[in-house]
Length: 290
Image (tube, rainbow, N blue to C red; front, side):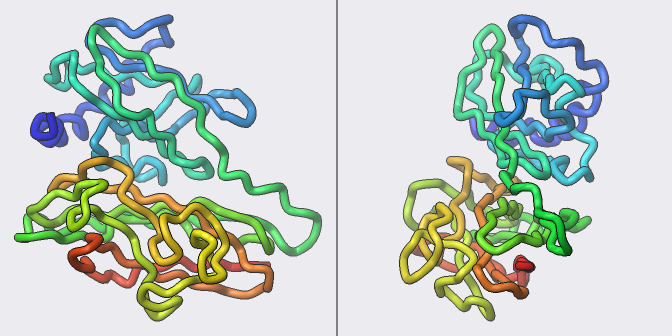
């Protein structure tokens, strides 16, 4: 199935805009050969429009940051994927990812489409409380779009930075969700749960330093705030079970604002746990605490 998904990559990228253009009103159940559903806000129950929809393992869709014309939910929060139009046989194993600025990434889990499949999900807003009156205002800057060209097919395990969400301004104690994409530019896949093959993001220098704890996040060890990281020095693990050559991994993690106002930086670098650090592109987050 992995090989089929990889072959479908180019077709998905080309055809999803077409599928979106002819998207119908949401029927009660998916017809044969269709994967569809409605995405709503977990907080309000209202439709989430313009959320980027990816059929995975993850394909290149940077629509979460408004720079890709791929498949997005419509004004009613509805989406539909026509497997027949993608030359994909109904009955395969799939997984969906939904991304939108200001929301936590939604993952469908693995499922089998056999005669059609309906997935309705709820996206959780990032959870930033409204700022009080005054000069301090919570915000998230614009996302940083991917480069026009990335290296590919390099022998061995390699990664290329592929864009990220914007830098946040937070009040003390507030939290924000960050997303960064890395393209598998090597010739070997990344396998979740397998030592020597699984991809993580690790803390890097100069701030806080290689494998060092940071006040911006962690697992509660060594004085770090517990923001759900795998470890105090491992910011995130690859979200998909397998990220093949030429595919993109969307890493997502939570940042907590320290109690003192100021400007903080979190440098990160991808690695294959138990094997080697991958390319260092100087990726970092600037967190302004007011």
